[in-house]
Image (cartoon, rainbow, N blue to C red):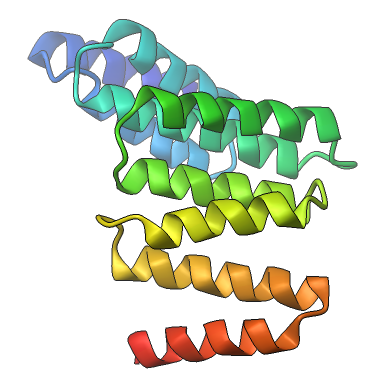
Length: 172
């Protein structure tokens, strides 16, 4: 993906597209589990185009690439997970509440719950996303499913059944 990155970077400079092609190559690298090059590509977009609309997306995907890299390392290092959580917090503070910040909170909650065994922190974050006004129904439903899974792990099956039923009713 590095060769494709060089070509996309040249095309972006020629066409003045503010990193759009480069971002697409980074997403391809991320989907194909080339996390190191994906991080490098997203970092380039962040540094080169800080005023473009692609800046926020590149920042989010860079954190996601680091998250995937931390999760796919065996054994998972708690410190690497905590660093990703801190990056997600910084992302939340930098940008206004929208779909990407809601997704960032969900990702952060899942890291707390399933990698650090901090279920109470995860519950608070997921409930916060569910209460957000401009979040899509799909993301709210995904958060409710995650919350139900966490309640099952905590030994509270009735709460999880309630959440699963709400999702079933909402997402026929």
